[in-house]
Image (cartoon, rainbow, N blue to C red):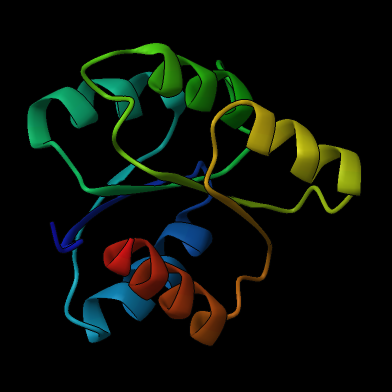
Length: 123
């Protein structure tokens, strides 16, 4: 199934705008959520095909939400890519252990992001 609908989960309006701009210009349909709780509600309602997840947010952090997605039979097939300012190798490893398919450090490189989405599409 080709990835077309992407949910961006980030509490920063600037980051949501930056990622939305990249994705929309490349033909993706984008929705956004400001926190993990909103993300889970939107996932069930909108059925995105990919999630770009921040880590540091109010309420449930991105690691916790990614783990919830990975453990939910209804949502587990949706790939999560973490996009975080947390740049330690231990953060990347922990994110992947929670169920993320990839981990990018902000600012996200548009070329790398689009290449990773294309690779997920091909898988």
